[in-house]
Amino acid sequence: MIMKKLNFYILTTSLIACSIICSAPVHCSSLTLPSRTQQDSTILNQPAPALVLHSLDGKTYVPARMKGKVIVLNFWFEACKPCVSEMPLLNAIKEKYDPGKVVFLALSLDNADAVNKFLKKHQFNFTIIPGAGKAADSYGVYAYPATVVIDAAGIVRFMQVGGPDIGQTLPRAIDAALNR
Image 1 (cartoon, one colour):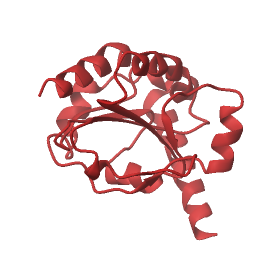
Image 2 (image 1 turned 135 degrees about the vertical axis):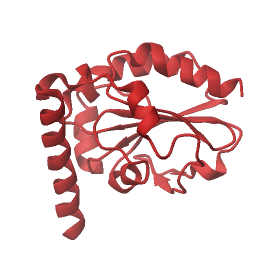
Image 3 (image 1 turned 45 degrees about the vertical axis):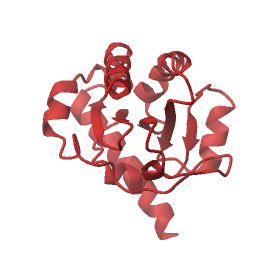
């Protein structure tokens, strides 16, 4: 019960923050702060937080044990219109990379039931991690969508909140992480 209230609180707070920051809750992707976000992030160029993540299909992902692979994390929730609108672009980016070298995880604030219902109407080809509010907190995510790239050594090399330019910035970040 407490967890449900906490998830509801996080979701509600995020929606309000998105509305305030963007002045248009339907189009938060107009928030373009990649350089400011990276400069302000205390996690950038630091080891990725130690997490144990459980996907919709029951698999366990431990980024700290995935050294040698680049990891892309996308933080989202189903009521976030900018999160949903960037999914086709994220799907296209994912298709360009070797799954043996780059792992794409979508960390949703929503519980598994809500995510499964959402996925009946929307395609998101990342591995979906439901109920990821604590993971978002670990990364200092304050607005959505947010995307993080962790290099093969386990160091956070990129973080972007929002981003109509994610189609350019994310591939550059992934390529840079692959070439480290």
